[in-house]
Each structure stands twice: as structure tokens, then as C-alpha cells.
Image (cartoon, rainbow, N blue to C red):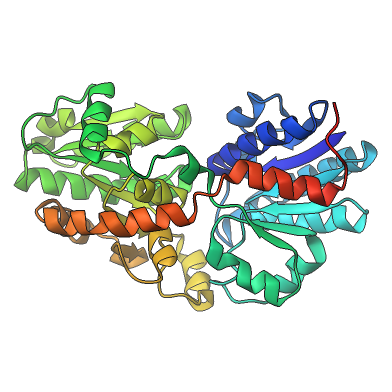
Length: 395
């Protein structure tokens, strides 16, 4: 049996790996083929191109890569069709995966989309395309299922795998101390740590990292004991971020003595957030992880000018950060586009760091949300997929 899968970014790679492991319990002889990252590859997945080739965001940016993406789509359709895939599972990356799903669905291959596109945020016309392309939608969050039920699309909320892996009752003080020791942070007494996560994509990092670093340097001028940790998604992003940090420090000769206040990490995003008192980060999956770790956060979102112009006319919700969406109200601050400035972010950071009661007040809200999405996602997703395939467990 061939199970076809396509993941386009690091968060999809994590979901894909968990799903592969759960599906192997039901189909031990299945082959998993398509596009995936290192975690999926470690599960025996066969990828036909590096996953990062699909990691492009926005409305305008993919146009420059269109010929390459169209070739990849044709290659995948031929491979999955020739080898008679039992099912295609597109993991996030809806711009590519829903188009691929439509073509495969038309060929009679059953299709699943794992992670709901933000149809509730961007208007609902996309729901009709989804209805034509997808046999089953797997959502991560309970609030996402209603729109699919309203349009007669099979949907199953599986919860989020991150919520399964994190203990909602973990002692946060001990967790922070342990993570600081693991990362080798020289933190003592009342010294505070801030985790900076400006994104995992090249363009995202290029837009947000300079502002984050400038805000951090501004904070250091007023709070010299602060420590900043900056985890990177991979070696390429590590080199990019080190270059941006060097540029930020070079803006003023007086900045050079702050170099030891920054620790750039290759990976270790989980430990970096656990070690932190506050997290300043790009909107996305990392905001969910920060929430599960009970870390107060400031969320930022910045797109290219043209993409922002389009997005600002399409978005239908007042908040974009996952903790705010899950709570149904503004729990954590979020800053978009032109509001992302070094002065604004540094002022907000210091205000939160000075207000322990405000930080502690988030704990109960974050814990309640955590429990609501802790549903054993990998097994839930595998069960839903195997029910769609309609074949029993093979040995």
C-alpha cells in the first residue's frame, strides 16, 4: 500500500512524522512517499524533493517559483497515480496541497487535508474549492469544525500533537531552571531571559529579525542584565540570523559589548522557550508551543507590502495569534505590519517583564486551552484516515 503525503514546512514535518508512526501500527507494510522533512524521513518516508522547496508564504511570493511548483505538482500526480496511492494526505501548505488534492481527487484517489486552512479568517469562498478537492478535513482545533459541518464536508478534530507531548501540570519554575541549565545560560538571581523567534522562513526572518534585534538592544540599554536566546530552524537560518545579528551590532560601536547577551542556537526552540520568562515571536505554530509551555508572549506578523495590502482586505477576524483565537478574546498582545517597531516592542517587553502578576494571570487561561486540545492527535488522525481508506489493519 502506498500512502502519499506532502508537507511543506517544519510544523507539517512534525505532524507528518507522528501520523506515519500511528498509521504504521495499522499498516505495517505501507510505503509513505511524497514530500517531507527530516522527522518524516526518520520514519522511513521517501521524499522526492527537499521540503524547503515548498516553504514559501504570502500571495505574491510563490509567483516567482511557479514553474518549479507546477513541475513538482505534475511529478507527484504521475507518481501517485502510477503507483495507485490508497490516499493522499496534504499536510498544511494549502496553496499547493489543495490544488494537488483536487487533481488527485479527480483521478479517483481519496484525499485528506491535515490542518484546516484559515477559511474562517480569510472569507468563505475557499470552502467550495475544499469541498471539491477533499474527502476528509482533519482540524487541530475545535472551533474550526463548524464551517465544514455547515458545508457537508467530512471533518474530524484531532487536537494538536504538541498538546499531547507537553504536561499541562508541569512545574514551570523547575522547567525554566532546567532548560536554562541545558542551554548553558549563565543566569543568576533575578536575571531574566527573553526568547526571540522571528520565524523559520528566509523572508520572514529578513523582515522581523532586524526589528526584534533592535528592540532587544534597546531593552539592554535600560536592562543590561537581560539575556536573549534565539533558536533557529536549521543551519541555513542560523547563518542568516548570525549575519543579521552582526549587522545589528554594527549599527553602533557601543553595541559590541552586548554580543554576549545573545545566544543563537541551532534548533532547540522548545528548550529556548522553556528557559524564557517572555517570548517575542512571529505569528504561527510557535505561538501555540509558547502557550502550551505557559510562556507569556508578544506576537508579530509582517508580510511584504503587496501581500499585506491584499491580506488586510481579506482578513475577517480581529486577532491572528493562536492563543487569542483559541480563547476567543485578546490574551496576548499582537502587532501587525507597520506596528512592528523597535520602540513598540521594547516598551511592551519591558512592561511585561516588570509585571509578574500580569504574566501569572495567563497561566490558568493557557492551561484551560491546553486541556481542550489534548486529544491524542496522532492516533485520532490515523483512525480517521484508516476509516476513510476503508481497509482493515494488515499484518
